[in-house]
Amino acid sequence: MNCILQIMVHCPLVARFFLGDRHNRFACLASHGSMESGLDDDAIAAPRRPCLACEMDILLTHCFSGDTAPYSPHSFLHAMWCSCDHFAGYEQQDAHEFWIAVFSGICASLVPRVSSPPPPGAPDANGARILLGKAASRDLQTIFSGQLRSQVKCARCGHTSTKLEDFHDVSLDIDGRGADVATPDSLDACLRSFTREERLGEQNWCAGCGALQDATKQLSFQRLPHVLCLHLKRFKQSASGPKGLQSSSSKIDTFVHFPLHSLNLLPHAAASLCAPAASATCAPPLPRPEHLYDLFGIAVHQGNMQNGHYTAFVRQQASWYHCDDAMIQPATAQAVRACKAYMLFYVRKQVDGVSLP
Image 1: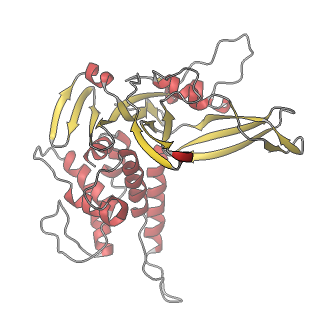
Image 2 (image 1 turned 90 degrees about the horizontal axis):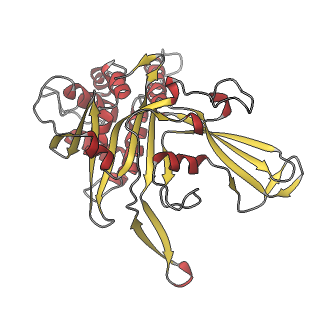
């Protein structure tokens, strides 16, 4: 949990969202009834369902208050257990799954829950709050939300069908399956493998031919997110035993090079994101600031499938830090580049025309 929370705290757009009072925990407490929280010593204890958005607001308020005293997110942990039963307890959990659950839980908790509608003819006092909550949830999702374009092309007639799908993170293979090289050794190679054209294993129905035909499929980025979360698939399941009825788990320790600055997603984007179409003799379009990303957070898994531990590297302004539970130490750029990343978090160089630190 500490690994993911450190990364979220150091995400400039998440900090801007909560410190900009997009979710007022005091108004949330007043609307749901008071409860004891990790930051408010004088709060009156009364039963209510813990709110993950309130806990994130408390955490960020403390981190940016200037108070150097350690902060234990025990109330956040309790809220997470109440929000997602799967993570209740002290068993080892996957950081990627935890990130998905935390982000989904915070977005859901931004929208107030109404136990019962108002009586007929009575004014709906909760209507405005619900609308504000939905707008806040939508804005928070927009920070991490992008869109993938999936194009399936008939090998016979060339007919193309297109499907768009929203995403909040992208999972990349690093074991070389279907890649251009045996083992992708760089993040760009992983992205090229993710967006390259591949032949589908089964025949697909072609609307142009009116029959089943061989086809190819290609993914590209239709809309880029403000914050890009990349998940390197280091854990895999393999079939074993007679008839493949047994499964075994293993960890992929492949080292993947990744840039600290100016990750360029333009080569992996759909044509609609590129500059106006140029002729074949023209040079490729140059990336604009909205195509370039700077790294601010890394989740690292140490150990094996049975015994593991997560740590994080986070960037504050131009300085890097290594976060290992309660131990926070400065880190060099060389140490950051040398880690075997499990999750990489990048932020756009510019958001809405404004450069980010």
